[in-house]
Image (cartoon, rainbow, N blue to C red; front, side, top):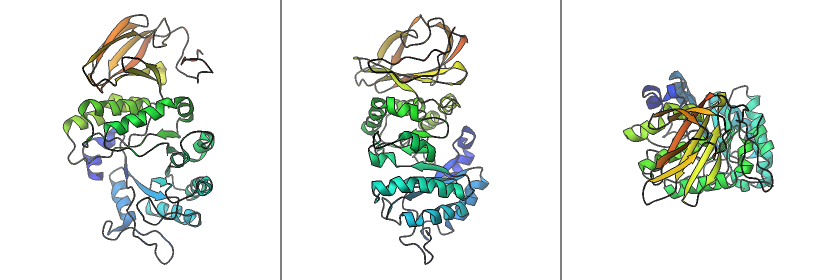
Length: 371
């Protein structure tokens, strides 16, 4: 996978991490209590693998678990081992740690996740820290304090593991946007909600569903973590995952997570993500399963300022629409389980910038803040 990332154009697009998940270690720690890589799966050890990955301009991620055992039954990182394991990962040259929460109590997690953050920082090596903490606490307040979470974790899993199916993708989308008032303000540069991996290129999603997952993960400002075999990836899946404009939008430096702003009885939904330089992304998503649907609206109806004029790029087709005024009606044709995604750049600036959102108050719908 490291070779493919380095040689097939992925690295230049920003896909720079190769992450090992559970089951990489031996079943027992060594005599000094250190984690040991499985001698058959990693005969040269993790340090040699990290060196190999780094030599290709990439970074290495690894998996741990804040409990007696990992979810797969391998040695976990109990509180007694937090500092030692953090130091081990740093000595190996690890660049990212995903810390799961199997076989641990709520009290152990409350103490252990912040302690691992401190231990990783104490190594002096920059290590991205992915926490599963909120996923084991139900994902929502009052059990989850997102202010504290953002202080210690760079990204976090909020919800169930993704499966290779469209139903699984929809369940994650539903949960994230039903709770967007809680989740959306928690995200920002350096601290992200993680709806789990992209399953594009496997077996569970159609072409349209694959395009939808990529667009919806992008509008959520989600980390893009591919879970597929890059050696046998289809051209259509590669085209989706390597879409340059999509990745630009996903990685927008403003770091605002998008919101669902329209949910129609026709099973069409619209999502909006504000971007830097006054730009924005719109996703028109169809939950229909029967036929393509023509959806007609205007930017004014989608809460854009009434005096704006925009250049629009269709993220997937590349088609450009110039001079679209906020009040102009337009139509998009959305395939079943599919999306149309737009990138909008203002060519005439509105009288009032609007790209920073606030949460609606009681009884209010979504609306922008006017600055």
